[in-house]
Image 1 (spheres, rainbow, N blue to C red):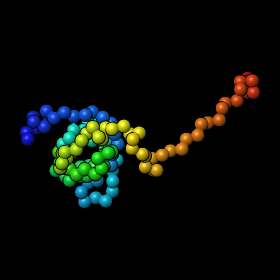
Image 2 (cartoon, one colour):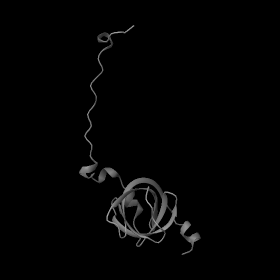
Image 3 (cartoon, one colour):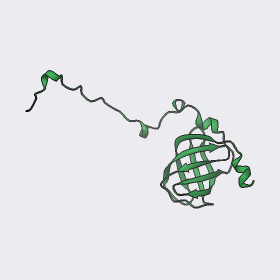
Image 4 (cartoon, rainbow, N blue to C red):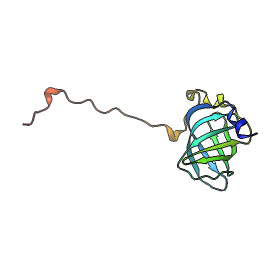
Length: 123
């Protein structure tokens, strides 16, 4: 497919976080997925990747998807998937997917401020 043909494919603009592994590296990197199509995605991260490098990305409701880096521009890069995915499944309501325990944060509200009559005015 030519570059022109690739640009004709419909893309879903979105913002989700995903995990990405670069072939030959042990660590997993967090990336922001900016747009998604059946054949690829655009990601943003403080990560150095090289065109042609093999990667795998863990997308919500799709699991680990293998691909290769198609282009790189500053902190954004494109990934061409080895096999097509269903972008609508990835976009599905996040509430339907339970969060990993590491992402759950317990929050407590701050104590109520004292009434105005209980404070002193300092001159």
